[in-house]
Amino acid sequence: MTKSILIAGTGGQGIQFAGKQLAGTGLAFDKYVSYIPSYGPEARGGTSNCRVIISDEEIGSPVFNKPDILMVFNLESFEKYEPMLRAGGILFSDSSLVNKISWRDDLNGTYYIPASGLASDNGLTGMANVIMLAKMLAVTKIFGRDEFLDHMLESIPKSRAAMIDLNRRAFNIGYSYK
Amino acid sequence: MGKVLMKGNEAVAEAGIRCGCRHYFGYPITPQNEISAYMAKNMPKVGGLCLQAESEIAAINMVLGAAASGVRAMTSSSSPGISLKSEGLSYIAGCDLPCLVVNVQRGGPGLGGIQAAQSDYYQATKAMGHGDLRLLVYSPSTIQEIVTLTSKSFDTSEKYRVPAMILTDGVIGQMMEAVDFDEMVISTPADKSWASCGHGDQRKKNIINSLYIEPEKLEAVVVARFKRYAEIEKNEVMFEEYMTDDAELIIVSYGITARICKSAVNLARKQNVKVGLFRPISLWPYPSDALLNLAKKDITKHFLVSELNMGQMVDDVKVSTHCLKPVSFYGRTGGMLPAPEEILAEIKKILGGKA
Image 1: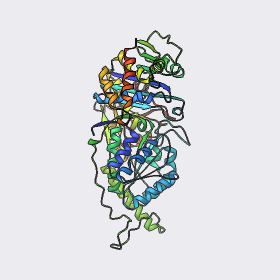
Image 2 (image 1 turned 90 degrees about the vertical axis):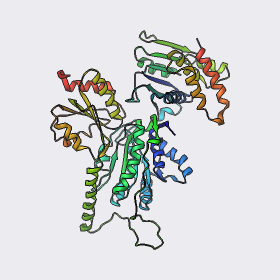
Image 3 (image 1 turned 30 degrees about the horizontal axis):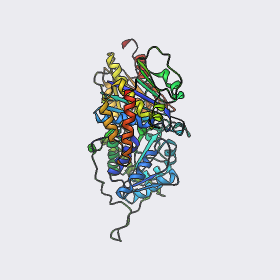
Image 4 (image 1 turned 180 degrees about the vertical axis):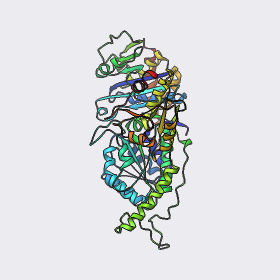
């Protein structure tokens, strides 16, 4: 199994956090993993994206342009990356922020989750990334529910223990979202 | 510690500290800033010094001073900054001082871009400053290998009193993958009886210098240095071969590009196309003999050089293989990366109907 995941949005939406959580969980379960962020001027307030590969085999290039899974958190990223999804790929879009849908008929699934709205409605502003991650995992089963959640919660430093419960709640909302 | 997820930039910094380097001199430039940031955070914890100099030139000359006093010293930069360090590196080579310089390459020439490139190959391997000089140049392909080569760089640099460079790029610097520091062989710093440091008048003073006004003396010093270079060429060559045994076409590639080429080799093999990969790990000393041996094999029909520049390594492959077999080139530059499929298409174009 090799899965390439592109996560794209705006700086401050937790794009890099989401990518590192996926790579970190992969590492914990003995997968080959790579993570590479966008860097440079575009990371300063503009678009932010990262590419993650989780594989049973050694990884060649960590950079890819045809992701298996695309997660977008703003319209600009939807417009830029939706056409690049591999045929048979899966799209996850934060529909609170992206008012477009995909017309491609060669995808294996398109999921529109009002993640930012769900987050703010539940007092979890800023945690749309975790809601989206949870939905993506519920669909793709790259990692088991508890595998990922336990790893993510463990990675939260003790000084920010209050975040543990918030992350768990956000994860549960995303995982059970229909 | 076990396996951890780390950026290449962070890993080279951690490896440097583990090697006993306590003197790091930096100056900011994308895409290597995580090295300075890691050093700033972690050097004080081990009683070391991380100093942000006023310029790249100042930083390399601080390395010269620190190395002259006998300590393990290190600096890092990216392409335009490395050009600024070239004068200092020539002086360091002329003073026979060991040190480690990390070049996290970006596109050039000039300010170029900030995405990954390998277009400083000529500079690193042929002309890293004025004068008859060489640098040890290592090219890591993985984060784990960055760690191994950091240790190797300090050791070899001290053994021969020749400066070392880790020539990497923006992708390896920025990407995270698993790295296990427990696998690292921590070296013991070499004897440095030549160091110019305080001794309370207990011995004759040591002088570190690169100025020899009398040509007879300068020639003798340079010739003696080249005897050490010859030893390095004999003993310190590093390379990896992947599926070269029955390969009709051999890709020659290093660093990040070699990873992409390895994927291309795997794609080709699934289609029964006989391709292999030869990956120089030390770019100087260059693995010429191993390449010549491959060129002499009947099965080998063609070499394909692939790197993130306009073909700077092609001549090294031609010279190494005595032009026994044709050498082609496929690369991207300016911060672009080839996809494995692009390299596979090039392989098929070369092998034509035979593939």
